[in-house]
Length: 303
Image (cartoon, rainbow, N blue to C red; front, side, top):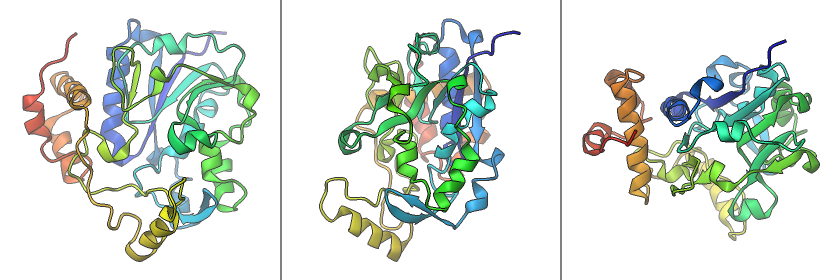
């Protein structure tokens, strides 16, 4: 029997579709052996069990919240689907749609997992100190994850049998089955010579969103900041999920902005994206409205 081809899965929704397209392109562009792995998108539209819970209450960080597909991150439960999609065979990598290859992803896909089921990196900040792991990039030995049943476990959130943050932070996994790779494989808003996968994880400064209304729901737990949680829960109750949140701001690192739009420019040149698609993304407020001006100013990337 032929070996299952390693696959990179990018999970996404309509709001982050553009990022997913650019992410896929970057993975193949920057690999020395792009035919050695597949890239597949996991889109919320293809998994109706998510939309079936619209408006229902689930457990997140110990608090009850309303599930909505209109949230920027409604795709996140799908990061637990790759083992099932792979038939619980072979090796898979799952990444967020705001992650872009700077280096060669085959180096990660081919590495020795030392018998672990999952490899990832810790979260930073207060969440990291609380033991949260960054499941936004996970290398998986699918045969070792037969207990991952995404739709069933998603349903448990709404029966208050599973907390979303415990799930996303991998706190429900046996720690002995988790290994760690270098942070450069999930580099949080840092673009340096050793960066391998750039993650524009700080939602407020995602380079393609500058100036757009914020469309993500912030945490409603204090995370070490007194009164933050109660204030954010009151804001949500009075003004809605995105009320009073303002707009996305420009990324402080212009090199990351240039990197993203350099990739967009190449996708346009190669017919992977069209100007019409970009204009549609602008109308939907999924792409900053000055994108074409920015593209005109963006230098071509080195081969």
